[in-house]
Length: 414
Ligand SMILES: *Cc1c(COP(=O)(O)O)cnc(C)c1O
Image (cartoon, rainbow, N blue to C red; front, side, top):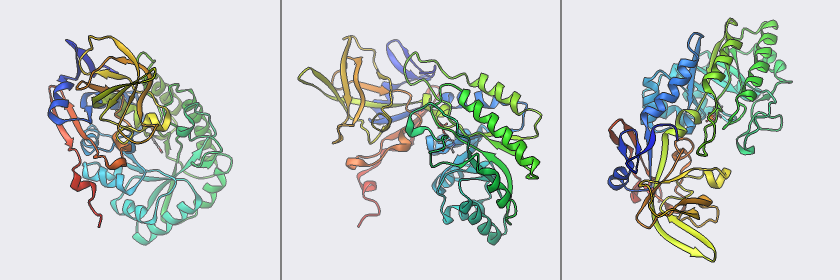
């Protein structure tokens, strides 16, 4: 759990704040984020790439809360977006549009026009038709759009199939075998500066070697494109480094990865971009939930809590693991149980068959390592109100998104 969450005198704390107090004051379910944790994780990237021209574009989709974005914008981060909505968030949070890269396989005309008119840094494009559309819209708006082609380097990221993106059979990018022809044809289009290459091979990579393998393939591609007279300036290697979700799992060696990357890129006259999401925010977040009931069904024990797959869908979607910790260290040992929510789906669990603290109704637990793809994937399924979000800074905390209200639940409906 990094070092921003720890027990002090039997109470789970985030930085200098007792989480029990947050749960009592703000209610549950509730996401809590550590600003120090987020800034430390960003700082590890920033320090690791010092000395070469670079930008770290935080992937907004991991956690798009305005306060989180503002924290990172003030630290100097750029942003990787995948929708017009994310661009809106970045601008609202005070992010610099010139540091924004727009990724994604299905950008609409409206989203492209919005991004062009705000003057973002560049587009990572995933098809020839998309490049042609950007070209024509840029000409009409009197802009020049910086464009990179997202290349599928055919590297096996060895991660969960739903978050692996860099193999030939995936919908993402353009195959490395076909991409030279795409550059040749697109180079002649007006309104665009075709000056980058990009890739993103997957997520939750605990070992950096697939990323380095992809980097090497991309550098070879840069050389080949430059030899064809295409002046590539930017190399964007995407995001994807993982975090230890299980207590005791090793943490990927981010400094080691960055130093190897730096030595590969140094002296090649390239602007290096990375798009980390999960590794910036995951470990700095926890989801607090109150125990509603305990129940035994045959031999099975259930801990029923007030958080569900509507607030944290990762266990249901990816069979993901989140450590479950009691906010007060438990004096009654442990129990093997399913920790489940109130949603009407058998897939609605936070943990299955897990040895957890023997908590009782009224106790509060935390699902750890929930800062990435947690609230960002929350829904109103079962007409549940989306939870509040709290940002901790040292000894204090503030609500950075209040809990939804019933009126907001039906907003816009007739
Ligand atoms: C999701 C995504 C990222 C961030 O991935 P993480 O695994 O969260 O670091 C970066 N770039 C692109 C294009 C993405 O789709």
